Amino acid sequence: MSHAIPLSTTLPLTEETISFDESTLAQGFSPETSAYSKYRNLLQVLNCPEDGAVYGNFHDYGYWDGGAWCGEQGAAGYWVWSAPNWYVWQDKVPEYANAGKYSSLLQVIYCPGDESTYGSFDDYGYWGGGPWCGDYGKAGFWVYSAPNWYVWEVDSE
Image (tube, rainbow, N blue to C red; front, side):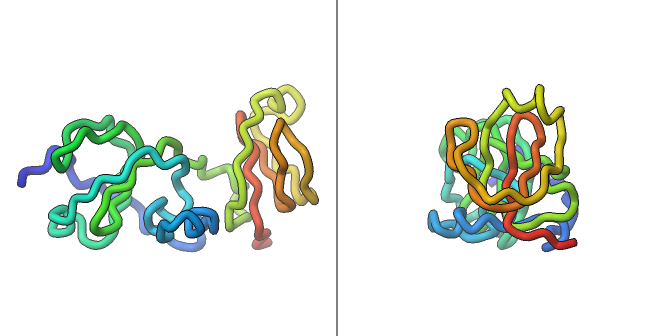
């Protein structure tokens, strides 16, 4: 089978560069399927066991515009290979959203209105949680990276 997607070069994934979202595991996905919480909002899963010969057991391909793949129409999004499936994610969690010091993402809350108060980025620190932006925010370390709040479980500093 010829592949339209060229292999890309990616940085190694380590606990220092990414964190694992436990809610992903609770949904039945392994940590690898979201590149350890690097991506969120699953769009599609494509079963394609023959791609293991090209991509091995795991490959964080990154963004692809989508197209015909494995006999299906692949969605545009962030593609992660975790044998024997491709997982296509809608969103990439910004690398700076953890302020370089937090891990174990607990929650993302969409809140564009907070930009007028917190600017485009704010490392708010620990908050005990409660109602926020029409959602219930979990207790944790809150970082605003417009238009979202990222709530982290662990402060590694």
